[in-house]
Amino acid sequence: MGGIGSGSYPRNDKAPEIERTRCLDVRFLRKNNLLKPGTSGTLRWSCKDDLLSQLHYHVGRDGIHVQHQDHAGAWKSTQQTIRFDYTPCHFGGARCWFLCPGCSRRVAVLSDSGQGFLCRHCLGLVHRTSSQGKRDRLFSQKHKLGEQIFEDYERGEGRLKKRGMHWRTFKQQLAKYRQLEQRLYGSSHFK
Ligand SMILES: [Zn+2]
Image (cartoon, rainbow, N blue to C red; front, side, top):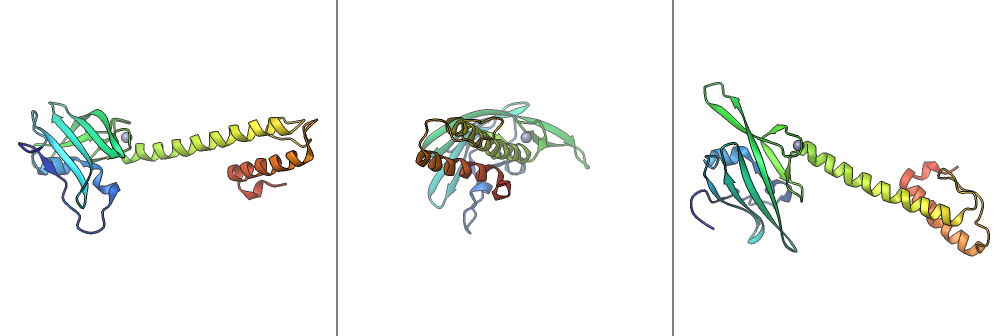
């Protein structure tokens, strides 16, 4: 897609850095004069000759509307409007910033989170949330198993084998239960 406002990121001839190439940098847009209202075009991120993702954009008065297509197996598309904010410059005029769609912080760089562009603070939260989700899943697995194998399972603790359960089965399941505990608390948990 050529035409006015179409551009591409400066190529990095060394090893490709995915993290860096999937960023939207307001300074890059400014430098290439792509922040003028009414401007539209396509930015492409590629690694060697492979197209990784592309972004169609249209600049409005107070923000940039983007449709980002990510080639993860098949093209996956997200749409966002990223608002602008301005701070006065030393020598007159105003400097343009992005307002992060997640937290409204004024930032120069937004990165692809997989579900739209976010600032690095929000991306940190996304990573924390997903590891929290993993922990929650481990907890519920542990509780489910605990209820199945212990007669006296209460508040995450159990000692007695479930009545009617074979010792062999109990020992096998207990080993699994201990593994889940270890993944949750580390080996220091063992009493
Ligand atoms: Zn943010």
